[in-house]
Amino acid sequence: MSIPFQHVGFCGLRVFAVIALFAAAVAGCGTPKGPPATANVEVLLADESGSRKEISDINQKLLASVSTAPNMQDYVLGEGDLIQVTVFEAEELKTEARVGSRGFITLPLLGPVLIKGLTTREAEQRIEDLYKRRYLQNPHVSIFVKEQLAGKITLLGAVKNPGAVPYLTRQRLLDSLAGVGGLSEKAGKMVQVRRPNDDPKLQPMVFMIDLDEIIKQGNTDLNIEIRRGDVIFVPEAGTIYVDGAVKKPGNYPISQSTTVQEAIVMAGGFSLTADEGNIKLVRVMPSGKREVVKLSISDIQQGSAHSMSVKDRDVVFVETNTPKALLYGLRLNLGGGLFGIGYDPRSGTAY
Image (cartoon, rainbow, N blue to C red; front, side):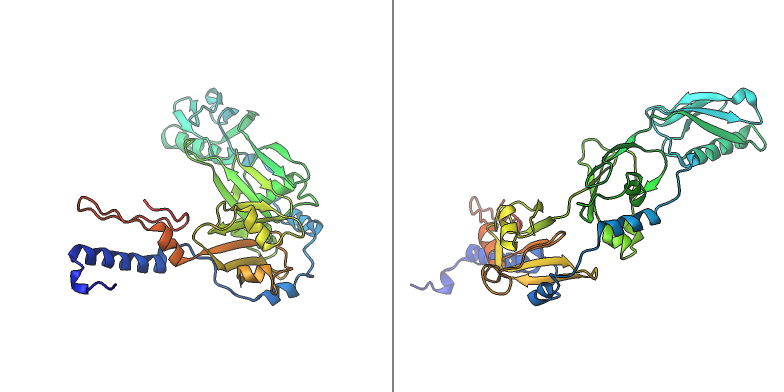
């Protein structure tokens, strides 16, 4: 039975209008989108036989690209370090001091001086400048580190000599990897750097870095500076990332025969809002180029993609189905004259 339009009151019109606007917003920008497709399945299958770069070659380039042996003038001073400060023009100003928890030492005439986070060379310059401003015409300062208690970095996973190592001088990611002998034969090419947050109440910061991007593509911006307290983790080859409309997005280990469908199952399966006909597979090709292929669940279960296995560093992204997201993510509260809509596109829950 149809309902005449004129019987729908103002409140009903308002509800319909808001639903229409909400649906348009969801379709336009409410759901996370994966990368656009750049290739078809045949392109990936044709390169299945392409050889991976040998770890020994990576180590050779890694060791060749790092800086020279550390210079103690580049040692980064930190909490707990015991140092000796000598002012050559004034023997009476010679001082032995330990860096406090806030990063200061106390010097004659100057009082507290902040040196935590500076190299010995930078700290010498700062102290020279302070004495020059008030007391000495052209001072020369030398710092000798008597005890190094400034912290360590930790390297874990598929490196040749895992463990904690002293953080002596400023260094970058490749320097740190070279310092433990490079990668082991089982290493993958994605490196995770976990860094403590300055605010202990906050979660650590995590950086995911592709070694190929640094060594093969020459993207030196990814060769980040390592800080004391950092944890560098190199996973073994055979790790993929599953994201989008799945129940448990994240990194997962794979075998040589793991399929896209099995990867989705490892991530808890499709969420309620998943578009099973719009799955993206992102792969780094032997040339270093990233290709994106659009798949559907039918392609994966039969068709050309049936026998295709996921590879190390692949990303599987399941797109969100907008009508499903609207269906599961929309809730109307009509009571007491109030009207509300809540929507979470990833989980499909209303609030």
